[in-house]
Image 1 (cartoon, rainbow, N blue to C red):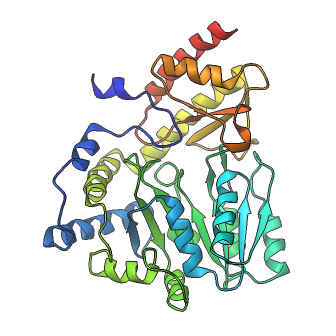
Image 2 (image 1 turned 135 degrees about the vertical axis):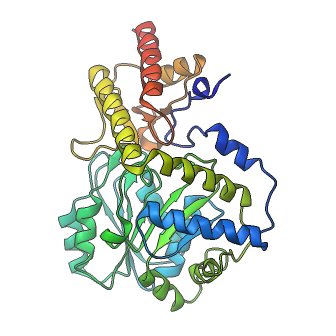
Image 3 (image 1 turned 60 degrees about the vertical axis):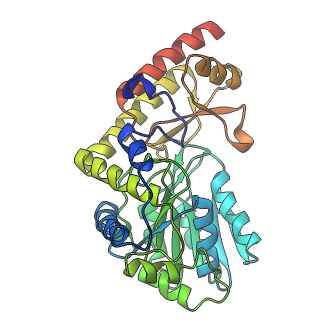
Length: 360
């Protein structure tokens, strides 16, 4: 079976992993206190800062993005957080904040709609907040939030840090982390980066590290100060997944060879094709103007039982996702991110058309 024929997974993560990346994951593990590891870490820092458009440290963390969310809460929330939510993962960040025993307010928006900057401004004027958390690309609903506009609002409140979950947007769409002044932006490797799961990349600002240094009880494993100090020496404070780091080097080489602009254009083309197909057969769940370029959430309008479509595609070797959480059975999702190409999307949709014909 060749590489192209393996591209049959259209989850919104984990995504398909290229053979070269899998080979790097299988290489002999490095000693994480060796000169070879420090050279690898240094190279990754350079490549990551360049591709992420940021100047500060990029922390490499052996954990899923949920761990990063908890770590950021413990490192930055002194008195109160404002958690923005318009889907399951925004609500998860609010639940994490509460579980860390940090006071927090939830500013909720209807699922399928984008976060409105003016409502965020009003909330920030109502009382002081240490941080605002946002899910940039809400995987559960296929909504992408207006990051530039929200960052502009946050700049009006310089004491408030802006922490952004870019789990399903980094390396799929253009994000100027430094230019927007994001205080934290992170992704899991199993999404647009197209590596195996279990690892996260976190860009942090100087302001975030200053806040962390003054925080008590920030924990050990996700201590941003310890992570940044170790990174300055091209190390990690604890044993990392060196296999992920070796694979990350290969994947960043591949991304730079493709070119970021070309990569983002490819993601947009796949999204446009899936959206056109969805509107022909069903309806789009996300409101117009807030639709993701990396995952499309499709409302079936009661036309079919979504589990039958998902199952029918799986029987033919194509994997998509049912709806998430409260949307299960009401929607289904097609991921178009990472190293998938438009030809793979065309293959999927042709098979989907055949399945739908059999269900009608």
